[in-house]
Length: 388
Ligand code: GLA
Image (cartoon, rainbow, N blue to C red; front, side, top):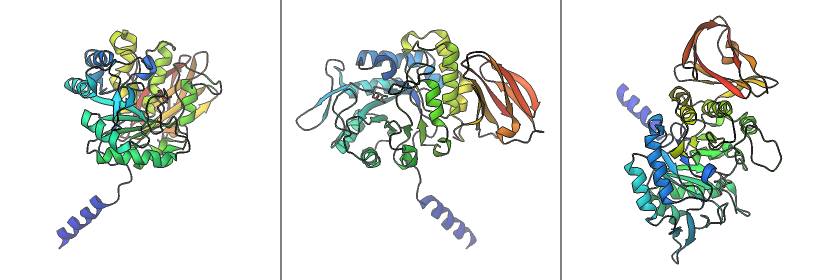
C-alpha cells in the first residue's frame, strides 16, 4: 500500500504541468556560431561549409560550440505552393545538403526567419506560413531557429511567437527556438513557455560603449540592461544579451575578455560571430577558455547578477552547482583599479574560508576569509571562482 502511494505520488509529479518549454534542448545555454555579426547578408554554402570545418579544426567544437546558424539573407522567395525558397546562387546544393554536411561534422544546423511578413533585410518572413515553414525546416534537418521581429505591423508579440513555437513542436523535431524581439514585449515575462532563449535588448555593436540613442548598443549598455532579469533564466530558457563580437576587431583583447566573461557570468547563449577560418591565437584563447565556459554552462543554470557597484567598479556573481560562486570584478573605468568582493555580498558569512581561483590566469590564489581583491585593468575583468 505504502509503495503504491509512492508510485502514485511520483506519477502525479511527472504529470504535473510543465512551466517551461518542454522540448528537451538548451538545458545549458546554447553554444555555436552565427553568420550575422561578421558577414551580414554575405552568406553562402561555401562559407558555411568552411565555417563548420573551422568549428572543428579551431578547437571550438571541443570547447562546446556546436550550432552553426545562418542568419538573414539565405532566403529569396516563396514558390507557388508557398514553400520558402533558398537563394539558389548562394546555396546551389540546397539547405538539406548543407544541413547534412554540418551534421556530418558532428555539429548542429540552424536557420533564421522572422515572425512578421519580412525579415529585417526584406526577405520573406514566416507570417502565415508558420506550420509549413516548421515542417520544411524539420525536413531539412534544422536544429535551431532564430526568429526575428521586423515587419510585424500590428501583430501581438507573445501570440506570434507562441504560434511558431507550436508549429516547431508539431514538426516533431527538437528545435532550439531563439526569440529575437529585442526585449520589446518583455519576453522574460512570457517566453519561458514559448522559446529556449530570448533577446533582452536591441542589437549589439562591436564596441565597448556606445550610448548614442537610436544606435546599436555597446557591451556596457547591454550589461546594464540585464540588471534585474536574472530570476527569469534557467535550464531550457535563457536571457539572450545578443551574440558575441569577440574577434571582430572593434575592441581590445582586454575588452573582449571582459565581454566574454560577463556573458558567461550571465549564463548567456555563447554564439560566436567572428571568422573562425582565420582566428588569431588571442581570440581563440578567449572563446575556448574551458574554465570560463564551465561557468556559463554550470548545471545549476542560475544567471549572475550585479552584487556591488561603486562608480566604474562593479562586482557580479553567480551561484554554482557545487555551492561555490563565480565572481567577475569588472572595471569600466579608464585606468586600472583595485576591486574587492566581500563574502557577505556572495551570501557567505565573512568568517568562511574559501579557495579562490583566477580563471584567466588559470592559477589558484589560495584560501581567503571575508573578501578577495585584485587589481583590474581598465575595461577589463578579473574572473574567479570562490569555493568554500
Ligand atoms: C535584427 C537582429 C539581428 C540580425 C539582423 C538580420 O537586427 O536583431 O541579430 O538577425 O536583424 O537582419
